[in-house]
Image: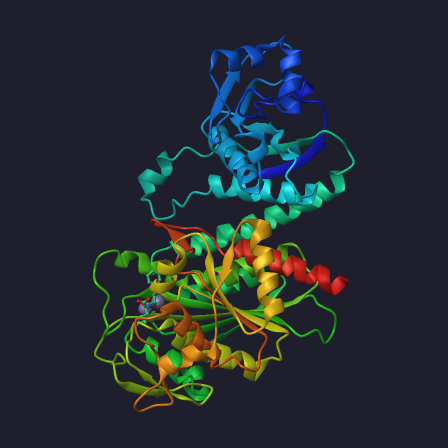
Length: 500
Ligand code: BES
Ligand code: MN
Ligand code: ZN
């Protein structure tokens, strides 16, 4: 999809479809009022008749509206005027995208981007409009057969032009458009990677994807294979990979656009391409969804893509700890004790708590190879996080309050929200081991927190945050692309703060 911004009168737009909003209780927006006037009160009459009440997600497509130049008019319900907020604004654009895609229209002029949203400027509105529309238009058909794919009708809709009333905000709008396009591209990449089943997305495949990304953008890669890991002593990552025929990879992507000597922001992602649980095997129901267990890694790809596309003036390193967690004759067993790259011994009491194991070696590797400004890791880490927060918010943990605040703010801005949970020392007690320095599980209570507490043992010297995305990286059977929007916005804000 191509996106543009321009200014003009709604009734003068020559387009296949003009999108305007209508509030509940028959309150027309400025755009709708202009069309109503041009069409001799057609809109008012339709609303009077009750064809559209203006509730959120409602649409009405009009053809051959007199007095205007557009071929069609799409009316989109906005809800009650006093309830209109950021969430409703996104819903309106998503609703418009769905309705537009269902018509034969090749282009559209979207008048919804000039609706006022409290506390948000034109840049935000354009950014969020693009992200919401792209989110709705996303399809994943790569796994359909040849015939089925040939039968898919390609999307007709090619161009969306956002129409603004005045020129005053045009420059900001263009900037928002660029940001929205980059965030949407990052989300698309993350979703494609996560939706791809485990037999098509192995750790080796992910490493290949990193090389593709490096070809397209100014990104360099470094891939550590099993042999390199053994030499370094990544006992935790190797223990997880031991039960699979698929060799693990530590994938490092580096985007370097910062000032000389600028410490890098490091993103670390859990990249378990399939999590069967290992010897602590998972029950069969829903196990297919464990192909999404590399969602954290996928978000590292997406965030790097967004940053590179925007040419943000930052130094960014992305690390994906990629492995498959399967049961096998060679697999790590409950009770086994392994030595991590950082040097601690860990008693693996449950082989299904594998995410923290691959991450602890990745986090240690980062500290041996970089002096980070800050580190954020993303992981589909615990079912317990879903119990705590459901599918709405990421679980956020941090040892640095300002970092937590910045991540929370970024998530709020883009509607990809996180909620902070405690990382108090009190929880460390649950990780005591009878034999090793500590255990990889902390019992039933506070599962998301004890998992984060395990990671915290490896990040004491860092400004660090952890996002548990178990409930948010996918819903139903589809990847969401989260937390790419949060990460991209955090990086945009970070670059702006540095620029002062
Ligand atoms: N990948 C899972 C967490 C998960 C489960 C994410 C369900 C999304 C949906 C993780 O590797 C795991 O198995 N965690 C265990 C930890 C437990 C053994 C301490 C869990 O949550 O049950
Ligand atoms: Mn697991
Ligand atoms: Zn897992």
